[in-house]
Length: 84
Image 1 (cartoon, rainbow, N blue to C red):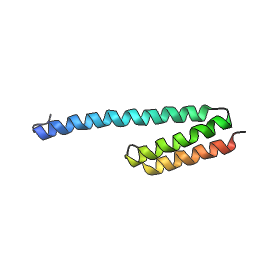
Image 2: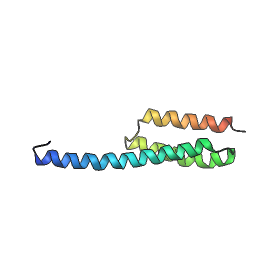
Image 3: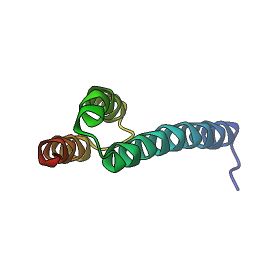
Image 4: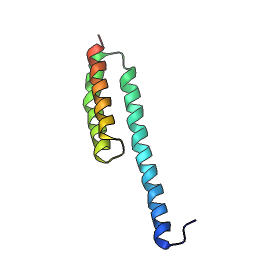
């Protein structure tokens, strides 16, 4: 266990940030799952801008890596193009 007051504070901060990051990453994964499960192309096109915005924000805040965000956006765009 930590011996210094600053270490104890750092542990508290890290735990708070970890929970915050986990919440937003999970929210993004749920939205991505819903996006992938849509059958209708029009619905997917409506959801796509919000998905892009969400991924860009998470990448900017270093919750996910910027290349992961780029790969997810690219895959989502391909999925829209593939839908009938």
